[in-house]
Image 1 (spheres, rainbow, N blue to C red):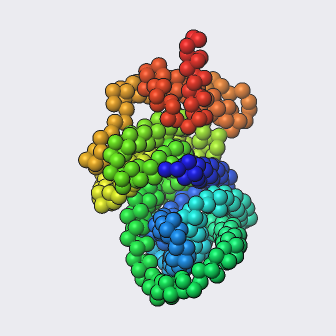
Image 2 (image 1 turned 90 degrees about the vertical axis):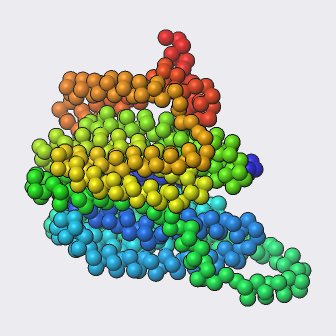
Image 3 (image 1 turned 180 degrees about the horizontal axis):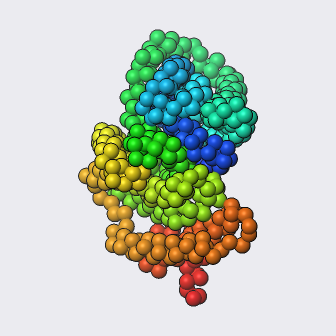
Length: 563
């Protein structure tokens, strides 16, 4: 790998990482006023609509952007830009047709899913139909992002994500506020329609960059016109032959789908699991706690828990993304020593970087929940909401391992076992939910989500061990477990103390904000200190970490030596 390639990879990863983090935090921030405006019942309807939309969005794009990126980059690498552009045009037509079909399906079948399957009622149907037009835009946006990625230009993708979230945030909140004057259902629909406006804004950004790239390509072609003219006679016959043998759209679609179907099956896993949660809570629990309370739990899990539990995933996977292409390259060269080294490295990075965020959110769930979203609407929701956030976030740790190990398997081209693991995980999720909900209610449903990710993680790691030798932490795993136990005990003790005694103002939200800062800061500070005390992290490990993390650990080490 050349220095230029490494720089491009690091730059692209950095752009997408920052954009993903900004978009995630904007998405979480959007939920704060929506929870205040729509309350748990309205957020339940909103979550039912949004999760179904998310699944169909992944299916509509069918992993085509990733496959398109690979094919486009390969064509440009061997000097065939015309073929790359033909593949791009074919993918654009696929996106347009898929968008129209999925929009129609989402609109027509909204009542069946929202009312008969999820028991969300007419408000959920209205919210689902309000977000349906977004399907017209996002398949096209996804294809354009894949093309730009293939051209090694990540800036349009990053900026479009951020712009999309800004417009979604502003319009969702604004429309929900205005339309609540009509009814709660219209308010929820207004919040959902913000996704449509976000899609229009993102498409506008992508079209701007597409025109800019087209002008740059035209200018590049103009600069080479003299050379092309000199070679025109000699190349004319070959060009004619190439034109006659140009790849057909059917061949393009066959190649794209062959590459993309395994990707979509793996990519849709988390979205599908979260959609299962919002779909089965009411049918499974309304008989014991009532429909209103069950819909409120859907609002808590979709509007609060899933938002916060999604943060550690981005932080961990973003750190490991830059290593996965290296694994793919080494595996294709049969350099198993390098594959082993990089597999160990990527798994260590994902676990050690994702774990602190998981611990911080899980321990500080109560002050974070009450500060960001306010108290739940009912005593039942208020007593269970923070615990739901904690449990779902703890399960996210295994989601990190599942996604990272799955990405390594993808880099090795081991797609068949990966798809089998997804099927097993979903089966565990469904069976666990129906069995455990009888005894543990909502916690049984959330716990089965964790079991799903645990099963997939174990299967992924087992398949990896058949391919390559690697060690995640080895004997240091005992030190990590000891560190976790100490952090949990001290962190929960600190959370109880702040919740009980730290009430400096008369505003409960401000008090919870202060408590959240104290608990999060205390827990986050304990993590690097204990990892070094228990020798889980060594000097060699630190050298492989990102520069900001290296500086933080170096400072912590100096403090320990002085003490």
